[in-house]
Length: 291
Ligand SMILES: [Zn+2]
Image 1 (cartoon, rainbow, N blue to C red):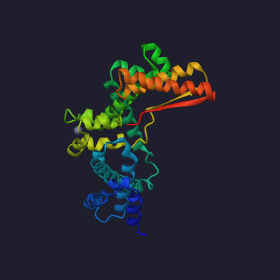
Image 2: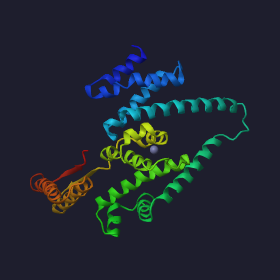
Image 3: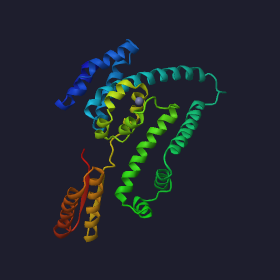
């Protein structure tokens, strides 16, 4: 089987991947225009498809194509950078006097400076909470007590803050001020993998039009699956029923439920938890946001 046929087969499996398989001709055109008959051309197409498949549940359906275009452009650019670096390193091996990995040291200090600048962009409250949790290891429940909130609400806040921090970090690293008012909202929707928000802010269209956001959306999406919208509560006795009820309520609030719906959801979950205590003795309630 040729490499190309293998790639086609891999993404062609199953009807739901059809949309991704449809990207192949376009990606080959883009790669061909940039690298010609370079031996890695087909690898670049395949790598793009793999990344698109991996990121698919983090982006709204209309964003698959802009994301694929951004991805393939990025991969081509980093391939040229890598070849350039290899070229220079080949000379370096003949010169033992030159400090090794000097380039990495410079990159590391640029990254540190970018993190500092990104942290400055957060407001005081966000920054304090994030540092207390990530650096000092303070639990969400303890933070919740301090600010008079619930652990679920604090976790949701931390998640939003991390999403913002990633955006600000990438902007700082690029030393770029976004060219339009829309850039930050789009990047934030991408960073938080919030598909509803991505639709609301017109992220798909924006990524096609905005070169900066198209480039920055990549690292934001290459982070693997998000599991922040899931809470597990071990049920071993009556107090855990309250905890399960609260966890369901917190996630439902985040999902935009209110009033009677909230009560219904919380009641349903506490019923399940109560049945666990009564009939099964112990178990686990998993509350997950499925949107
Ligand atoms: Zn933009």
